[in-house]
Image 1: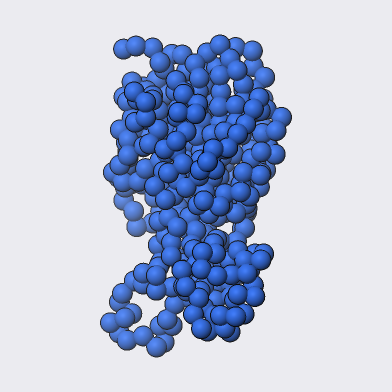
Image 2: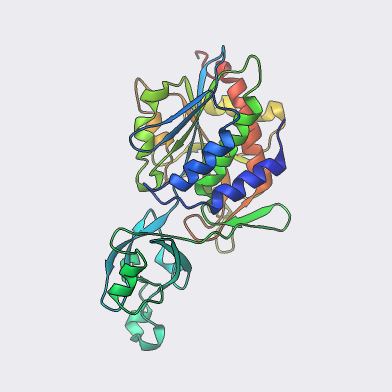
Length: 354
């Protein structure tokens, strides 16, 4: 039975975990604990992807996929005065980074903030230019390179946003890393819901690494599961904010799960879109269709492997992607869980011929 409180707690724990690309160990540990009661077997591959076989079954083999990593930064240089110069890990916008609190991972979590040349000493021309991420730096309060070294921080240290999970306005959540801890939480909840059913399909939950650096982890998962159907669970753009015309909203908070028809990495098979929308309508699950001209998900790598893998993307609309403060509506995430579970149970229908 689907439990909204359990889903919210999973989302909180996972979103507060640290998981920059290639260093997703904290998230792996949380997911292993959450799936310990519903796992037939689990393993990790050489890239670090986490595989959980939820159940054997008589139906098709269904693979749920969600990525564990979050956008982050890495230290590329420590100067003589103790400032940390950074490079982005994923698509970060310098406009939203200036002045933000961060955590630098050295001997332990070290708090700091992101700085840039103060406007008070800029020329008028400099004031007109949006800074590049490479022009930003992190200040951890050190006065020298030696003080930074004593904290266990150096070139290659990771920089993340601090845990900040909060529920606001009843159904809205604000946090770092909702992209894609929402998908991870949904996969965990679906696993718990379907684990004990008698005639459900064979089900796997796969949690990938390095999605934010080009869908890297997803490149090697199909050969290890050999799914009949892949369901990618993501967070997606909700641009339903002031200054954006309705035709550019992409998705809207509170309007249900987003069924992706297109992005820059995949054009979803129309037959699968019709099947998935039919499942949603039959089950009374709120949904919205999504067309994007940019962006991509792990589906972009998955559907091109072997002789082609039937793949759909079910997303939770989310405002302010790739910032320290993302926002989603729990009703949308619940719709993602319900639709994913119903789709897994109906997978045989999706795979029928034309």
